[in-house]
Image (cartoon, rainbow, N blue to C red):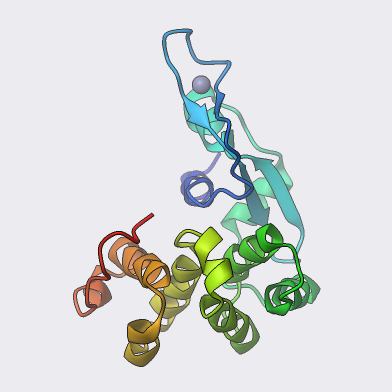
Length: 195
Ligand SMILES: [Zn+2]
């Protein structure tokens, strides 16, 4: 697989969805090696098709030479952000809908970072103020917001400063990862919410 596709896959694997209490260990590794995996990843193509795979797929590729199907490799290599489409519209609607299942809303908050559009931003901002949703999303809503701001090359200080601590941690971590130049200007979020 091309290196850029592998890197994008590893990135997606760092944002697993549907994580459960039980951990699966790789069955291809030697018995004395315990490589854990949990949850699944979403790989979205430019046309909005969402491919799902076990989160362990990144390990299968890097450690066991597994090769993803070509359409999935194409999806990983497609330049982001994507042009707004029906999938983005549907994900925004799920994220806005307070009656939608919480897990779906968190997934939508992660998936929407594939687009850079005012509609996706509005949905994310709305989600970032929903305490119940933020509580279960770890830092993922903040990470998606950070991806938006990293692409823009600018952080909105007023929104950052007024965000819930977990959201701020997500933004902060994403800036440290992708835009350290912007991270240096951000106030470190309070301890105890970095998970
Ligand atoms: Zn393995």
